[in-house]
Amino acid sequence: MAGNFTVLSLFSKLSLLFFINLFLSPLIEGKHGFSTHLIHRDTPKSPLYNPSNSYFETLNKAFHRSFSRAEYFKKRISQSHSKSLSDSFDGIQSHITSITGEYLIKVSIGTPPVDILAIADTGSDLTWTQCNPCRQCYEQSAPLFDPSKTSSYRKLSCESLLCTEVGTQTCDSENNCGYRVSYGDHSYSIGDLSAETFTFESSSGGSVSIPKVVFGCGHENEGTFNESASGIVGLGGGSLSLIKQLSGSIGGRFSYCLVPKDSGSDASSKINFGTNAVVSGPTAVSTPLIKKNPDTFYYLNLEGFSIGNTRISNKGFSKLHNISSTAVEEGNIIIDSGTTLTYVPQELYQDLESQLSKIIRGTRVSDPLSIFGLCYKSERNIEFPKLVAHFTNADIVLAPTSTFLEVSEGMICLTIVPSDELAIFGNLLQINYLIGYDLVNGKVSFLPADCTKN
Image 1 (cartoon, rainbow, N blue to C red):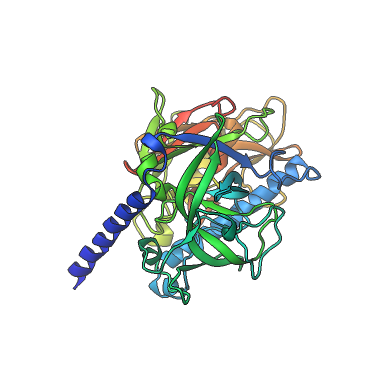
Image 2 (tube, helix red, strand yellow):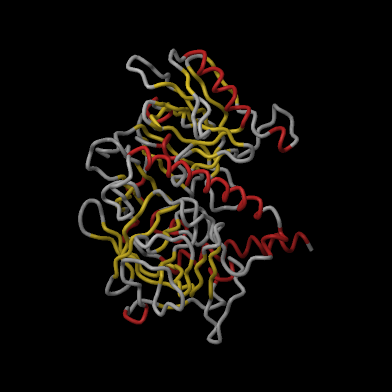
């Protein structure tokens, strides 16, 4: 019986991949690529930007969003390992909290197109937006998407593979597939799983239209959503993500280059798809993507750090999982664009902090908010060492400007913090790297870059 189930499950997966490629190809003629802008929520180009907040107030809010996001990731991973919990959810379940997206992306939906600004997120699969008729909606500044005014919209049936793959049980009287997105803060979106043409602005000018993208057309949406964001664009690794849907046309590849928020440049971060997303060059390095549950998240192997000639090994969460200190779990860290800080196991952090404190010559101070463990008084002559993050087959040099940040007036802190359960490689440490995800070949590549010019 178990053997038959395995065969059927494999057949289902292969059928789904065939369906996605048949349904969505050819999307971008000739398997070319395109690039578009990512807008950090706390920059003047973002409608979420609040000029009344000081630089340090903005940073502090980003740190707190990191903690909220990390907590929800823990819950999602725990739920993915528990059948009883996963069976208690109705409909499609999303994998992020509604308040923690750091980057926005502009996209137009329908024919003729309607502009929306959505959270671009590598920790989520389902793309969704608010739709008319809206029985219960949060207030948003942009007009709602109205499927009755577009010629390219259609609902998916409950028999469609994309509907059955996620195990939704919601079907209306016309056999249309329904979805329900639930979030950790009790926010939610309920609506129809549908297909529509998505159009992205190209950073090189013009636009790129992609037909038959599956997304959620939300008719009931409530919670802590911001009125400037109309929904979410899912860039995770699961079946419903935009990346998996476009696998036939972009070859399962996307990349991004994150600009420092305080660079003084007017340049935006960029996200690239398909041939535009290839990361190569003599200084490019690659590390394997590890398949784990939930498959939304992108897991890597972090072997440790080094400072100069001193290597600090990652022993993982050995006490928590009751494993030997020499055994390190495969896929022991999530790389995520929506988390600002980097989280590592408690023991690894303690070893790292101990070694850094021996090297740095400065006046050590305590963080009054108890967010950071290693902080120094901001002094003219203080110097911070370069760290190297050692992933499997890939050594990433971390600039001191990313690993140490002035988090409040006169106080500089290490942006790597300890965690008891979950490790995340956050976006501060990803700044000024072109980072490419290749889902077909199962790897993530890093190339040092000046992202203001990339």
